Length: 527
Image (cartoon, rainbow, N blue to C red; front, side, top):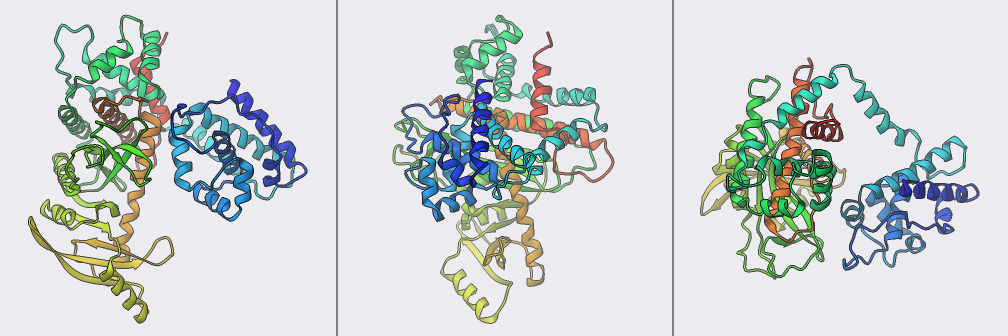
């Protein structure tokens, strides 16, 4: 409540300044404390970017509707704006993305939205002249849509709860810590606590206390007991348990005609930031941001118009300056993911991003008898083709080539098509026979990969419990269970929609937040 009061006070201050000036000038003359919210980074964290400057930047972006990229370009064009906000240098868009995901907690997110949305509403309701302020309907639309979804009479509350519990009941049975049979707590009680922590997005100590308060002190384990139990799960057995659970979840929808086979799948690697000392941390890797470190996990997910489940999870172990790991061979990660996923469903096509552009990956997918569509890095040979296309005034070209590695060979085609961004030409590799007339339509399939970015966002923002543990077993356990909760949400949504006539749609009818509340109600009885 204190932080929300502070947010409205900030909004009032901006509105008052706007009454006689433009938005940038309003922020320039702004003298308002943000002491009602706390910096999510600890004191020792190397965060040179001012916390206050970051908060004001996000309020500015939320008022104008600027994306991270738009706002970063604005600061580059107008460095004086960066200075007046309090930055010593112009941040790039990745800095804003990391801050929102890692530095800001939920109260801070609410603070930004409350302050900015107050300003937007006041500007339009009071007819204040401020051309950069976004339309009012943009900030009320989401709320109205959520209200509409709750009022959708296709799904009764009782049916949603019943289906959620059905999905949850298929989840826990395949994980075994190997602890003694006379242990004080059963594994299920740790799973319930982990689920609760993921849903309320808190750390172990706070989560255990809150869970005990709801279920009783004798029912739930203490935080340190929970961590000790988590460390007893062998990483390989944990991944195997996830695999068996996935098979069980898919068996629930095996008879549904709306589940299309074979499936299109996407493989990607996501990162969980790590800020501590890296000495002895063999599972911590570097990232594209030279100064950042992270745990990495590869996943294979169903995409397209099917139920978007994560079929396989694979830890990524890379060589780094602080360990003796062998060089990461990404094709082996791909092989394990696809083999595991094919145990559940037939796979028609695999989509990967440019990180997987490797002849070993191409041959691995060919050996596994699946089609692939992967964007190529532009080397000298591709550049020659692009130059020839420019000379011939061609928009589309298809080049036949082949892959030859120790594990085999196969014919491959390089597809040169107009980029969907509207700038230049994109180059894709595929093992399918695609001609120039089909190339553009075929490459449009790649746009389905955006779903995996939305998937990762939901896993991390809605279901991943917080931890600062250096122990990799804890990190893996937390991530696997976050993915499991995501799958439960998506299965629940699929089962609800399967009873409704019409085309199956990717967009969920039950939000992640609603699923969180329902699973929590199944775990914690009402008073």
